[in-house]
Length: 279
Image (cartoon, rainbow, N blue to C red; front, top):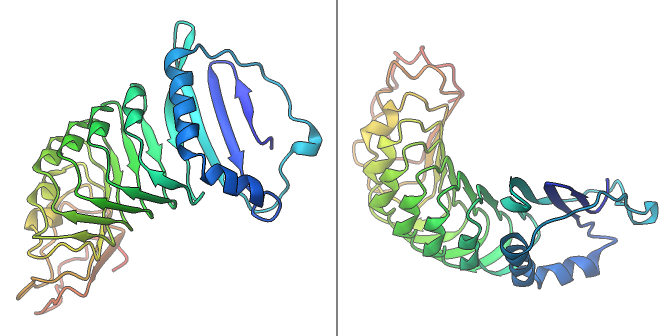
């Protein structure tokens, strides 16, 4: 596979970093986070993309060693211009802050910057990237509260904020997101009771809240979300006399269910044979 490849009307910049052979390049790129994104913004917003498909010299091809693949994809075209739609930069130990300038990428649908060393808060202006359907910020050092403006991302399907240092509660504006399917907020410093709005996401299939910081009670509506297939909640205080939840008979495909360290009491139910799950 080439280190990069360019296609007309579909630009894929694929970075391969091999720790043993490209250590200097990796350290250099860690320090160029802002320069890389600024270059992409300028490229997508002000310059037409005209790319020739050229093979990479065999001497410069990546080896078969373990690598990370990261993609910046432009597959939306309008006239003579291409637009960035996907940004995936994961497991690169990038340092810095999330750039507010990404709001200029009006056609952006996918952001994944997991497993880096990013700090600071989520830029409120990201709520104006209204075409966004996928946002993964897991495994960084992000902090602050979740901005209210994220409630404007009405097309969002996936929001993953696990393994950060977020605080406070969730803004009520997130209830405006009607098509949320995957919500992951484990290992954070949230506070207060579990927000009721989670129980209103009727399309939710995956919910993870391991050690999120939230306290009980857990809204009963969560256990009646009919599309849930993966439910994981653990290490939550503020639960008193919490018995095993009465799961909706309409939940037939709950394959994974974790309820751990929740101070549950009472009898184990005998009427959950309708669920094909790992408990």
